[in-house]
Image 1 (tube, rainbow, N blue to C red):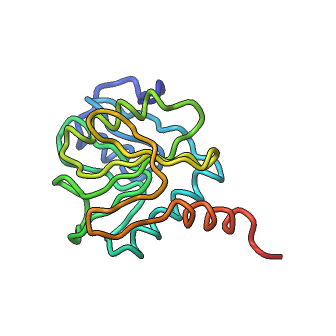
Image 2: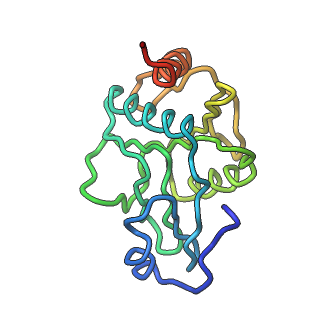
Length: 172
């Protein structure tokens, strides 16, 4: 996780009251932890992933608090689930996607391990800067070209990168 944390112990309820409506925070073992602030590329890729998950048949969202366990409430960059969720996921969801920012790969490896321990079925990491995709399997990130989803649909890497370029360079 990020090195920036709030300094006092918080219950999950306290965290939700103080930070629940603010973007850029996650709850981890009694602390509010600041996520890296996204740049334009990160935000554009995040929005695109949410849209592509929706097109592939998933209920999708960004930055939603996962409230599966009381000690950790992460906010994945993009999340997808085949079943509707009313407010916060309280059971493992189908997909989480994280967008790599700066040099945070070590933090993301830890986060992937924790997502897996929660029972998240599919975990993906994407780098908009390098046009790379990884899937988390057997405690390791493996490079992939396309995202094969649990419902049988595939999000092509080529689609992700071409759509991202369109979003970054709209027609004049």
